[in-house]
Amino acid sequence: MNKVRLLLSILLPLSVLLLLSVWWLPGCRSQEQKIAAIELPLVIERLDHDLYRMIDDSTCRSLPELRAQYGRFFEYYNTGIIRAGESRNAQYCDIVQRFLHHPVVDSAYRKVRDVYADDRPLRNELTDAFRHFRYYFPDAAIPHIYMYVSGFNESLMLTDSAVGIGLDQFLGADYPLYAQLGKAVYQRYNMRPERVTPACLQAWLAGEYPEPFGGESNLLTRLIYEGKILYILRQCMPRKAFDDILGFRPEQLQWCIDNERLLWQYLIEERLLFVTTPFVIQKYAGDAPFTAGLPPESPGKAANWTGYRIVERYMKQSKCSLPELMQINNPQQLLKEARYNP
Image 1 (cartoon, rainbow, N blue to C red):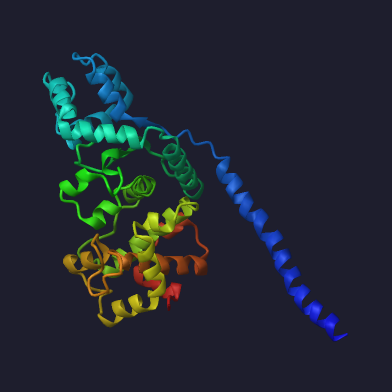
Image 2: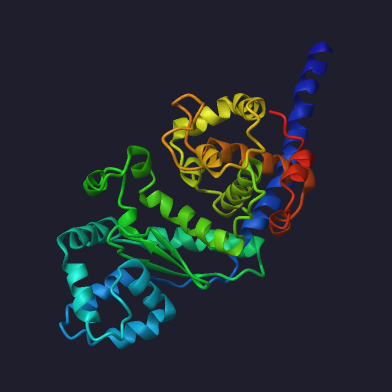
């Protein structure tokens, strides 16, 4: 009889777990099926290829076609990224040819062609991320995505309808020119193909939901804002490694997980949450090899990780939608309602 009771005590919890898994999995599958069914003709074009094809002809006969194809973005690129001036200037073709034939730029383009010879995985990843974005933000605009060679000027360019990606800024941490250009090790780590999609979606989110930083903003404002963005990125890229979304090394992410309580206590005890000095805020929320005041094993922007954890906790408590989350303008109230206490 005792053996029967023991067997039942084991089997009953297992049966409950089985029932819960049967109940939960269809719901999870249903959401992913809905997302996969969303029609999203995401426009992704390779301006880098088109420009090099254009200069193969010394008269640049395809220039009018590029103007029509890329619209206003084309002039933003010409004037804002490569500093060639507007495309209707008489010297434009000569200037672009000299720019693209410069040994450094041409070498970078050849590396771009090698790294992104098959850009289908990147296109699929971008499409999947923005399909998730459309699911969570059904009324939001979806940008056109244009890829270009920047001459190491700008990795991303945001307009009201497009995101531009300088692929020469995402060639891999070991690309020799990055070190020669003076990029630090921690900067080079994020110049990898794995960072293209998170950086692209993050740029678009920053345009849709600008940083609410003014004269009264403080570190809490910054870390809650960054936490919101990171939370959305993770929802929109559920199959992406979270360290790639964060821009952390895997061991840095593990440090944050292992030291979450320590990090929060440090921010509290040093009375940093309500600091308004931009330089101090940047020390804890900006790019750096590690976070000031913390061990060198910590990542730069460790405060943003804390912001993510606060927002994650708040979302579990509130069950609000992502658009509703982005409309919350009171960081202190969000922190209070999150009941964050690692």
